[in-house]
Image (cartoon, rainbow, N blue to C red; front, side):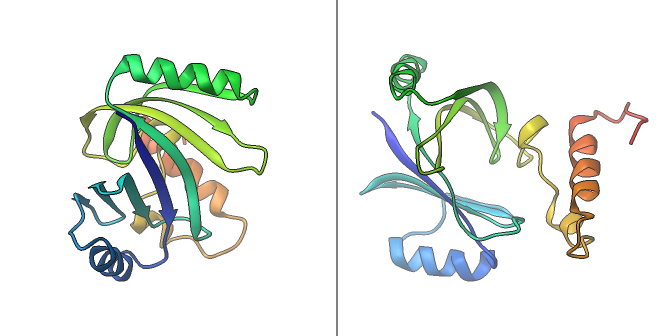
Length: 165
């Protein structure tokens, strides 16, 4: 059975968690320093929020599936939608191990289709790596963010053996 997914970028995680805990009448299923997720059954939705973004609002929408067979069915639907599909494959994102692909709708809204098969201790790796909140605090608000993000992504992708920065 599929589950609808919504990911929202927020400014203040603590304030937003309190709001959504009250709205959903339940606590977050996963709560980290920069991320929270509610796995709701009524309505059946994976609702996530995270900090560390320059803008707030909808990050992306998606469909979460429970099996690889369901994922292949959603991938087929993505192909029929005639948009450009980015096949990410196996990845670590949002403190989870998943297999996923992405498509963007005609309005520019990103949609992901994913199957989660494990947990992770980091927000993301590789292309899903993003600076930790303490790294973002170094950003002074100018165009230097590219260097801060590049350094953080390089560090996240390395296992300690990288020497180039």
